[in-house]
Each structure stands twice: as structure tokens, then as C-alpha cells.
Length: 163
View 1 (cartoon, rainbow, N blue to C red):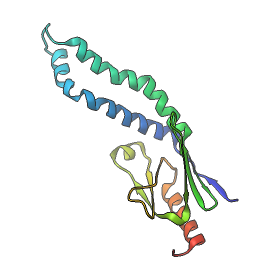
View 2: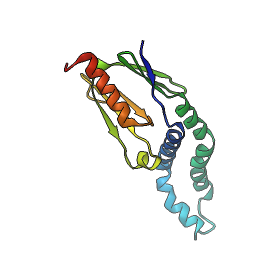
View 3: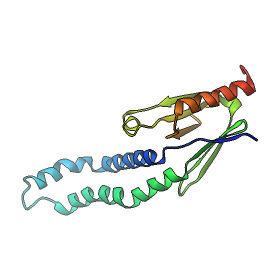
């Protein structure tokens, strides 16, 4: 059976995941940022420093502690491969996933690169299938994404023709 593992830029994917988690951790503290800045740069002794310090420290602890470990494991556990006539994607840390997508169901593979992905120099490949309104899988950080996309679509075309 013909099996091809896709190379993944794991360092860039880990940094991308970590940046996303950091931004996600900052969203809940946005209402506290203005009072925190006032407290640090001109607040009086009656400023609620304990609460503000807590909400300022939590994202930092997450970024350097648990979040760093989690993102590292997420990037390490990713695996994408073309196994015969099936595209397989695996990953996860606490909740593992294994997806098998038959090539005959794949209608398109969209390459997406938003600002954060572009900053880290990686692409997200969104695999779209027939019969599904949303993408079936997202493959992050595949090296030479354009070539991999063309390889998958040409193999699908070679096996299934114009179905």
C-alpha cells in the first residue's frame, strides 16, 4: 500500500498554537487592562491591585507554564498522511482524534494563511468534502503546502477521474 507522511514544520506550528492560546487568554482580561495601566502609571493607594495583578499574571503563567507544554504536545502529536486512497489526520493531547477521509469525498483543499499564520510562515490546509457544510479537517504547518495539495488532488483525480 502506498503511504506518504507529510512533513510538518512543528516549531512554527507550536509557536502559532502558543500565540493563539495567549490571545485567547488575554480576551477575558481586556476590561481590566485600562484600570491596570492606570494603577501602574498613576493609580492611587486605593486601586484594587490584588484583582488586577491576578488578571495580569494568569496569562503569563499560562504562557510560560501549562500553555507552553500543551502547545508543544499538540504540535508533536500532529500527523498527516496519504494512505492509499485515504487522507489521514491524527493529533490531540487529552482528547485524541483520528480522521480518515476517503479521497473520493474530497471536493477541494483550500490553502489559508491569515495574519498570524503568515507571521509564522505556515499554511492551514482546509479539506472540504462532499456532503458537509464545513471543512472536514484542517492541516496546520504542512511543508510545501501547494505541492501537497496538488499531490492529493492529482491522486484523487487519477483514482476517481471526474466524479
